[in-house]
Every structure is written in C-alpha cells, then in structure tokens.
Image 1 (cartoon, rainbow, N blue to C red):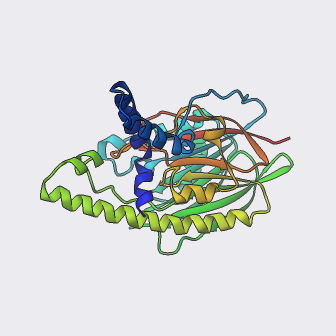
Image 2 (image 1 turned 135 degrees about the vertical axis):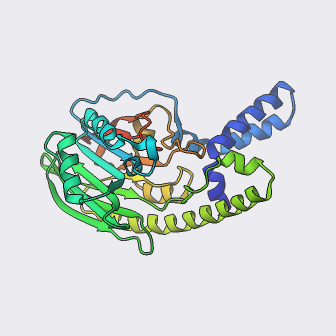
Image 3 (image 1 turned 180 degrees about the vertical axis):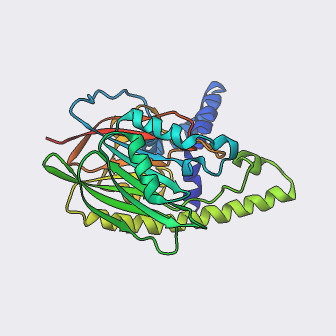
Length: 325
C-alpha cells in the first residue's frame, strides 16, 4: 500500500529530488550522485506525466474522442455553478468531437428530458448511451457517451458495493466497429475536507491530525476498491472482440496499480501524441494526472490535447485517432 501513496506524490517528489540534486551538485557533494541515480531509476514514469517533444501527427482523416468529468454540471457549487450546464455544453459543442464521454453526468429532474436537451445543445446528430444511478428524490447521476457514429450495442460493467460506473459502447466507424469503455472509478471521497493537502500535512493542531488520519483511511479504501475495479474492467477489455478505446476518470495516477493494470497491452494517447505537462485534475488537492484515453494497436493516436478550461475540477482530454495501416 505504501507505493500507492508515493505514486500520488510522484511528480512532486521528482521535482524535489531534481532541486536537491542541483543543490548537491553546486556544492560538489557526493550525495548528488545518489539523487541522480534515484531520478534515473524512476525515469520510465516521467513520460507518463510530461512530454517534451511536440507531436508530429496530423489531425486530418481522424475521428475525435473527448472525455470530461463535468462535476455534476457544478449543481452543488452554489453561485459558482449558476449557468454551468449551458457553458459546459456550449464548450463541448465547440470541440465538435465525434465521440463524447462524460463522467459525473447529473440529472436533477426528468432524465429523458435532460438527454433531449443535451443532444439538442450539442448539435449534430448524436446518439447516446447513458447509465444513471438514482440518488435522493428525482435526482440521478451517472455516466454518458454520445456518438456521431451509429451505436450498435450498449452494455455496462457492474462494480459491486460501489457507485462507480463503467459502460461500454460498440460504435460503427465506417466499416469498422470499435468498443468504447467509459469509466468513472472509485474516488477518494475527500470533498468534505476543505483544507488543501499541504495545509493538512504542515499544520500541527489536533483537529488537523485527525483530518490527516481520516485522509489516510479514505486514500487506503480508494486504492483497494479501484484495484478491484481495474481487474474487472481489464477482464472485460480482454474479452472484447473489437478494438477498444478506454477513457475516463480513473481517480488514480500513472504510477498506480489501477492505471498499469488497465493500460497493460494498450497505448496511452498522451504518451503517444501529447505535449507538455499531463495534469488533468485541478481541484483543492495538488494537480495530478487521473483522466485518460487509452487505445489498442488497431488504432493510431495522431494528436492529444488537455483543454485548460475552468468549468470543472477536471480538464477535458481529447484525442484524434485513425485506423492503423
């Protein structure tokens, strides 16, 4: 379990170690060699967070996949959330993606009416695959996939004892069928903790110590549940008779078991065709990379973007694909 905790902090530990190595080197200390050795040992993870070379692929002749955790359209964000649904949908429409995968989809009223409203707001001829879980009163939340291409099959993956959701959608692109997995895996459930992680770790009052303990328990539960969910999702992926694209909010970093399990045998579109820092989460806790678009060898990722808009605590991620020769 300890490596999982370090995985959350990897990009920050790497930065700290680089700074320490530079300081030791300037002081001509032997410890600089040790710091450099540690950096080199973990360098395989570096490209999962930061890409220094610009992609050379073209977007022409590709279809476009967008994945976005929309934070319940900011329904519970008070005055900050007013008008968010319209703004989010307008922005998604402006991207003109062929396949749109949304996590934390939220319906405060009639879900059928909301679906019609969203399809109208997005414009174009989208078909949909939506999975909802009832909450209190008439409200429901869930996960949704919209496609310009024909949908020929819809299915879901059950995660027992959890509100996490995974759906798969078989989509016909020309003469080829692809299976799109849309996932929202177990969260850490840290919403009630208003202090930043840095404040919780550095403060010394009794209340904060209790919060840190609670934080540790939440993290541990999240790691365990996601590892089980990752196994279920991966087993389903392995049984697919079609080439797959796997997207969503994994709520875990590229160093995690969850990511490594699901990615095994697949490609990461950010690693293949992204550029710059890969952070996709920007909430109260330190930024990290937890949203992904993975794909198998039947496809090529021409280009990948993280869209830095502030409508949610996540950024939308978007990838362009073409069929491999």
